[in-house]
Image (cartoon, rainbow over all chains, first blue to last red; front, top):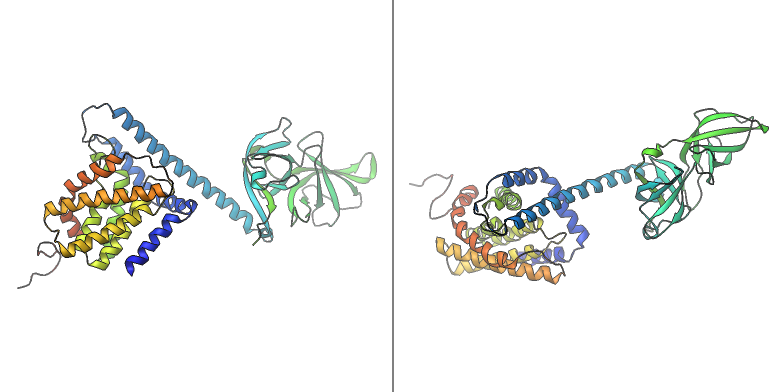
Length: 258
Length: 173
């Protein structure tokens, strides 16, 4: 009976998804990385029993190098997977964010005007135009173009960007426009009697289907009366995220159906 | 059966098999002894039937963890488990206590486990970058040569009786 159960377990492992068994192997390599690394190095430093040169010596050295490269690649994969897990855990730890889905993407390059980012995720990863993009837990822009495996993020400072926003604790809903001068945004049509101060936080307002909760996007850097319309305020904002040094972003996608 | 000692022994053997055993290869890196195979035969011979089954499958699990075939587990769990159990049953009929017999048992078990593992891996449509001649012939041969000599220290570690001597126990008068 014991033999039957253990054989069944072996068959289950044999037919289990490769992703699952691969994680088990990665876990073994990670947990025992120290002895595996050091003993491999010690082994390669010692002279082998076969001291005679033979025609296959170069081939064996190449094979050994390949195995060492494989180990290094596996270790890098483990580290990358752990970084992704940590980032996703931070996103999900925020209350009410668990209703949203996130797709992590790497920034591959920036546009010439520095107001666009190219990311390595696209339609195949359920990315669509209009979806909000987060950087450092703040809204940095929206998806403007998408292909099969890559997409373009239009930052909130891009001159055609228009994002519904609120300032501070106020319910006053306005639109945050990108400014032609670059790297800043503008919020217009705010009545002059409205209390807005430098340093106030600007939130991307929630949009059903795209953004389930308001998320911080920028902060007020300048505030004064609009010279062309003194009854209104001219508010300048800057993103709270250091976009220039951003390597990875999270795209807000519809949460998977349960 | 002292399972903690068994677990430590299998763990050390797995780590050594993956990293250090290549130092004692002959001619080519693939031709090196298989420590897990030696452990399999040892526990099949010197453990009770039930313990032998558990030990065989556990050693197969460790062999799969350290296998270079990416993301595939199961072939060596099954091959080690089945052949370890068979060997334990055979030992109940034909005693495998003498060193030449142990060497033959290691060689035959090595060939059969390698063949079965290869077939199961092939069945899963996995291409395996391995030299069959090394795994089916030279590795089992090398393991058969040095295996019986390793049985004594393994028996000492596991506190298993061999040849009427008891380790760590009192002498009866």
